Length: 64
Image 1: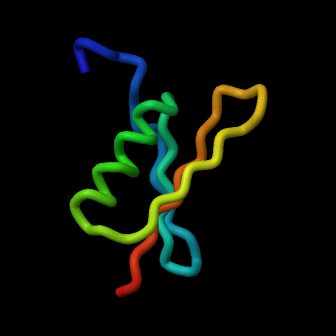
Image 2: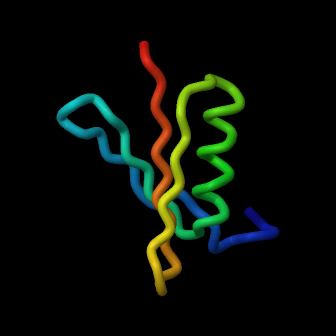
């Protein structure tokens, strides 16, 4: 936190279908969390960068 004070988790939203959406302030943090989930729990990880924007969407899923 002291080293990168602007890199934060800013929202956690549970969707109706049981999915959980996390919102971060930094795409590098978003990617790191996605890679950590995949490393720890396997599953599928997809990245979607928005053209011309500082935005990254990461989708991780695993069959139960």
